[in-house]
Length: 517
Ligand SMILES: CC(=O)N[C@H]1[C@@H](OP(=O)(O)OP(=O)(O)OC[C@H]2O[C@@H](n3ccc(=O)[nH]c3=O)[C@H](O)[C@@H]2O)O[C@H](CO)[C@@H](O)[C@@H]1O[C@H](C)C(=O)N[C@@H](C)C(=O)N[C@H](CCC(=O)O)C(=O)O
Ligand SMILES: Nc1ncnc2c1ncn2[C@@H]1O[C@H](COP(=O)(O)OP(=O)(O)OP(=O)(O)O)[C@@H](O)[C@H]1O
Image 1: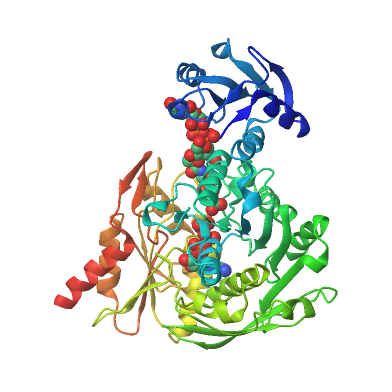
Image 2: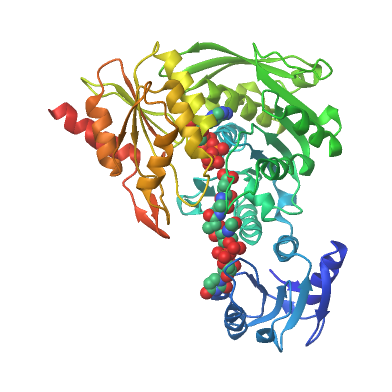
């Protein structure tokens, strides 16, 4: 892979990003490397000066390692002797130049993208399951949990971000294409738009699943309007759009989609009993629960409009992942499969056995309540989870182990207090990624909002002990929820990812102890 200085200048001009350029050697200089981390520069490279913790010394280090051109929002003396491309916005420039450096790998992939406050990972895994039926070993996945860039086990690794930095994104897309991948299913976080990680990228199909307040705080979005605005960017960058008609802010979301996409290419879905407020827009697909129990879900997808029927994805579906919200996620995935040319005959087996680490994992414990480990970690997802379990288990006593992370998502704390008051009998407030905050203070903030006439609250900061006490106190017929971390293998404490044996393992260990007596 290589990119010439001249190509960089032309691309930046084309996107109105170039403020000035200083060319030290030939304009035809080829750069054979690209990096935003000085430690990863090797050979004649293009280097981006970006980030809140960027220090000019990194540019000196990059130069020492061979970088010949730097891209930045202002000139640096440390870059003297290098070609300098001074740009209006370095993260946008990085996205445009990375796509070109890796030779536009998105053009060789059918890209399906999901955004939404909740359900991105689940829908992405479902969609991959469906596409893999039709295109075995050819479907890449960029999710919060895993990044899959090829068919072999060593081409699958844990993700650091939900949506990677643009440079890493286009790099991984190129690797995927070179490994024979023809499709990519990816999650797009609102941060990805805020930070221009997907700037200039067009998806074949873009999904808007839902939006509830989250990710608002000092290191994330300044307010809800900004969060919604960034999420809606996915819609104007998708050739075809699928929207959950039950989402909050539907009118704004639909209006955003129609600014660039003709309604013929916009598909709406909703549950069978949902009554839309607007009569001028047809809902294309309805999904109807058939049997919902605590081991499997079964629903029927009904195409309502002609364009929906043309996808040939109607009919009954089985899921091994329970939860009524997962029927909504599965509906999205099936429609995504349909838009990629995969019909019900393949979608059915493709989705039936998909399971996702840390999502709705169930543990039966003899002599005690059933335990669910789930990744729910804001008001909306906790409500969906607790509402479902209340209905499924005939209004059981709910014992909930939960904490809220430090340094981000501050709005989650009153959200947890509210949802615990609405549904829980007993809450065990504990530690969940405290970061640089004091977990006791975070727990106290949640506790402050709880109605103590309705909920008994225990604050047990040792997460394992909190889980143990909840499981031990539960009786048959009760439901214990261990929320928030899912399959996370660490706790983020003071800037360090401290290993954590995973909630699922902890629950299994305690279950074994309880059963052994
Ligand atoms: C706020 C944000 O988006 N931060 C991301 C961003 O940080 P940044 O651009 O400010 O960079 P930085 O970490 O300050 O470092 C400065 C620069 O110096 C460079 N450097 C550093 C050291 C050195 O020796 N040499 C060198 O060149 C670094 O490579 C970097 O480019 O770029 C970093 C990678 O370069 C990311 O790790 C970091 O994500 C942080 C850790 C993060 O956790 N972000 C979260 C909020 C996030 O994006 N989450 C969403 C999901 C949320 C959702 O569900 O909606 C996600 O998509 O994952
Ligand atoms: N469609 C949905 N509506 C509401 N809650 C949901 C939905 N889908 C999943 N959930 C809940 O949210 C949790 C996280 O689901 P998932 O990982 O699919 O979402 P995500 O959008 O990837 O989340 P995050 O951005 O936090 O990584 C699940 O464990 C479940 O409790």
